[in-house]
Image (cartoon, rainbow, N blue to C red; front, side):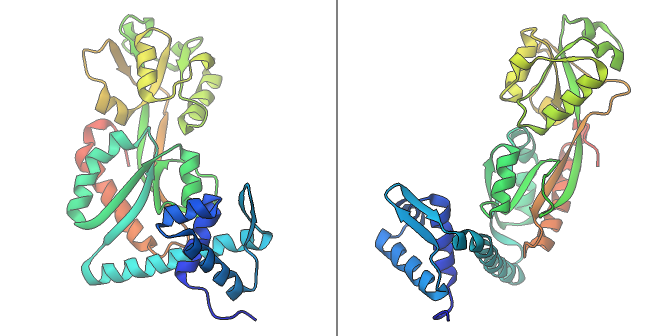
Length: 310
């Protein structure tokens, strides 16, 4: 029989040790002493009548029982945070701190146009923004380190709920002296045998561009995969190839004269679909849908000239 019920604080300590890998790092992360943390984990294990961690000189690992309970512990913590957030919203409207993840190919070109509006709509709301690769953000969301993510589709799991925000075209950029720059209209057939520069494979747009290149007979310049949108732009300017860049980036960063020509391709609809995503059972899901609608409205208001659609 279990002796007493675990506390929320004990579950938070359990999750922190599991994520940190050692009691020392977890104690530093939590801002408590290591003996206090050890005592609380021991009390939790006694309450559950289970051993949660295997301890060794090299670190701390979860036992099979610990691995099985970890996601449940995260869900309990999330439900409690959701309860407190919901109570705060009832008392004084939406507020509190929410952790949101964004892709580095989205955040810098979108957030400056919406954060001020969100702050005006929700004066008590604080957004802690973290940039990372899409797959890493998805994992952080699933494991509770983030509350929301704003990144391009697709997602690889049904455990998340997504709300479509807007569609963003990918437009072709070419150097001024390039043969394609001389054409009044660029057709898909003109891309045959062209060298197309892309981001690395960990970005969703890479797979979109690769599919287009395979269909049209264009060549992906695999030796010149970019680590950022700025890197792609610079390589295009140096004549290494041409590239499809997101419309928000072009709207924000590419201004004439810059030695670059921006073109749409007839008969080719290449775009990114941006979504706001959260865990399917999140207690704040009603507010997240409201937040998604606010973001859509701000994009329509502030980025109408960036060729995004809804």
